[in-house]
Length: 133
Image (cartoon, rainbow, N blue to C red):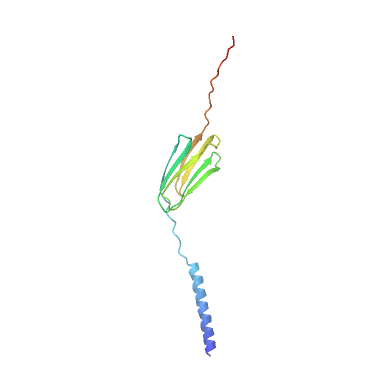
């Protein structure tokens, strides 16, 4: 009689535990969407011809800095970490071909975009005339 009672008790306990676990997984609370981190950005060129990008943002959100060409192809992508509040990036654009590029800074909901135009200066060589008399 004791073995029958113990077996029945173990079977009911396992059944109750299994049902409880399966109910707990299906009734998960819905995660609220996180607020995107606010950010500020500035850009300028250095004397060496490099593009300096400064990004200040709130901690707790991701921000991505991306440079795309006129066809939309990403030439350079730099994610800024969740807990990082400031980033100073220097991009050497001397190896890129001439044309228009978009610098896009985004936190997922807000996008700031600037256009950068690369054009090589045409070297005007002085033309000398040499006359022999």
